[in-house]
Length: 290
Image (cartoon, rainbow, N blue to C red):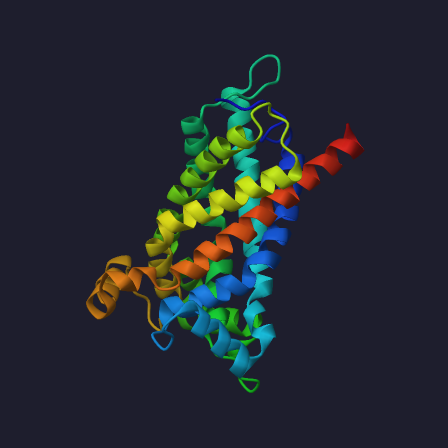
């Protein structure tokens, strides 16, 4: 099954960019609380379950702490999705658009384009990801700006490690995002074809497919996300191999799935909201400019 131009792929670079930014805002707003719980579960053994982590976090630090790191998270999401959807759109138009203006890649081709796009977006979001997870995993302390202010976190990292500090976990980020977007775009194309086989999906249908795709993708790549987080928040720089060995030695296989439930729960609303925002943005863009 293949998609026509109106089903999924944007038709111009500026439309790609705008829709990616709008979708990023929707997705970050919906997914940030789950992301904070996920990050804390990944680096701490003090919580036995996702529910316990969420309850204790709110009880001792307040509801607002679930949105810690929102600014760098939003920055990361905007950069990620503008790069992702712009690169994705460019590749599809260059490689698959025929003379009639239709884009018809197969499910496998779409997944492959998604993986390639994920490499570029993953490269772009590295620094913001580091700031976000460091804020999320530090318990709030009003007297310590390093637990609540991204500017202080940036200054600390630069002072301790220079520019290299902002490349922490980059390999793990690539190893997470490339397969993530392979699964995401492949699943998205497949489910969209089932829900709207005539190619005329509405925003709600896009959101449903985005939710399913997000949950499926996080289920596949989560162990690599654990290693990424540990590499980015450790006191001293560590290699991916060291993070893997230490996690397995201390916690066994289960250590690679701490916070998995939160990630999957986040993947559904966050990616559903992302695609809802993209679909609505595209409709508004088309109404205004075409």
